[in-house]
Image 1 (cartoon, one colour):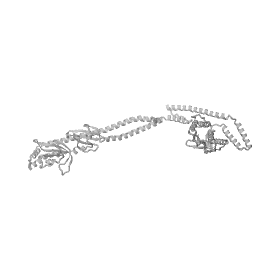
Image 2 (cartoon, one colour):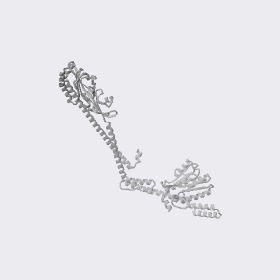
Image 3 (cartoon, helix red, strand yellow):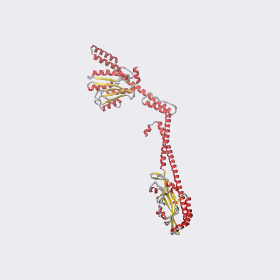
Image 4 (cartoon, one colour):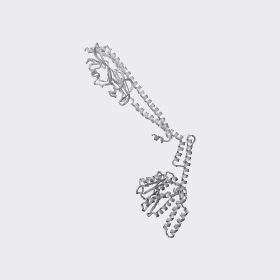
Length: 591
C-alpha cells in the first residue's frame, strides 16, 4: 500500500490525504447520526409499549371493578339468596311467587347486565338441580357442569381466564370469556355459585391482535399462559425479568422489547413483547444509503481537491516533464517557467541546471568525437595515399600488359577499398556506400581463400540512404568470413539483411554466417566484451572490433542503438546492428 501511494502523483497524494481527513469526521458524523436515529426509533417503540401496558392495566382495573361491583350487588340481594336457600331446602315457591320474583328482583338484576355493555353475562347457578330456570340469570346445578371451570375446583372469588362459553350445548360456543366465580353462602351453607363474565377480546383486544413479532399475554405466577397467544416457548417467557419499564431482550433470534408487569386486579401477570429487529434492519439500509452518500461527497471533494492541486502544481509538472524528457535523451528539452512563486523559482533553477548539464555533455561529446577523428587521421596518415594509389595503378597496368586480367581486377577492387577507407570524411555515410565497400572486401577475401564466399544482400531500397558510421559493417563481415568459410574450409554464404521497424523508428542490419557458432559461455563473454563489462581480449580480435563498432554507434546515435549477437553451436552466428530510421533522410536521398 505504501509503495502504491508513493508512486502516485503529488496532486493525487494530496487529494487522498485530504479525502482521508475528510472521511474520518464524516464517518464519526455517520455513526452518531445512525445511532441517534436508532435510539429515537427505539424510544418511540418504548413509549408505545408503555402506552399499551398502561391501557391494558386501566382496562383490567375497570373490568375487575365492574365484576366485583356486580358480584356485590347480586350477593346483597336478599330475595335472590332467600330463593336459593328455599331451593336448597327443597321448598320451591308456587307459580305466583316465582312470577313475582322474576318480574321484580330478578328483572332489576337483569337491568345491571343490560346497562353495562362490557358485561357479557351474570349467571347464578343453584346448588340443586331440576329447578325452574329463569334465563338469562338463574340456572340449575346441572347446567353449571357444562362450563369448563366447573371441574377446576376454584376457590370463591377466583378468576377463570380465556375459556369458551358452553352453557348451551346446542348453540355455538362464545370464545375468550373471563369470569369471576364466587360462592353464594347463607347461614354458613353454600346455596349457589355466581359467575360474572366479560368477553376478553372486547375489553382487552390487545391480547388477541398479536402476531409472531408483536404479542401480549396474561400469565400466572408460574409463567403459564392464561389468555392471549404467546409466540415463544415457556423457557423464553420465564427468562423475561419482571420490570415496570420495557427491557431489550433477544427472543426467537430477534431483538425485542419486553415488559412484564403484575396485574393485581386480575391476579395475573401481563407480558408484552414488541419486535424491534425491523428497526435495526431499517437503520442498516439507511446506514448503507447514508454511507454511500457520504462516500460520494468525499469522492467528489477528493476529485475537486485533486483538480485544484493539479492546477496549482501545473508549473511543477511542466518543469518535471522537461527534466524527464532530458533524462530520456532529448538533449533539446526545455523547462517551462510559468507565473511567479516558489514553483516558478524551482522551474528556473531546474532549467539552469539542465542547461549546465547540456553544455557539459556536449563538451564531452565534442572531445570524444575529436579523439576518435584524431585516431582515424593518425591511422590514415601513416601511409601516403597518393603513393599507394600510384603503385596500385602501375601494378594494374603491368597485369593488363601481361593479360593478367584477374590480377588487374583485384588491384582495382583493392584500390576502391583503400580509397573508401582512407578518404577523410566527417559524420556518417549512406548505407549504399557501406555495402559497396563490403562487396569489394568480400571479392578480395575470395582471392585469399580456396573456398568461395558468397555474399547475399537483401536490403530494401528505402534503406540505401540511411546513415551509419563509416566502416562499421566491415569488422562484422570480417568476423563472419573468418569464423565461417575460413574456419570450415568450405564454400560458405554470408547473408546481409535489412529490416525496418516503423513503429519504433529504427532499422536493423543482420549479418549471419554459416560457421560453427558459439556455446552459451562464449556468447555471454562476447556480449560482455561488446558492452564494456569485460575487457576485449580475444586472440582473433573480433571482440575488440565489435566493441569499437558498438561504441561508435553509441557516440553517433545514443545508448539505445548498437550491436546484438545471437549464436548457438553448429548453427552459425548472427550479429544485429540497430540503427535509427530517419524518414526525412530517405526523402532527401530520393531528391
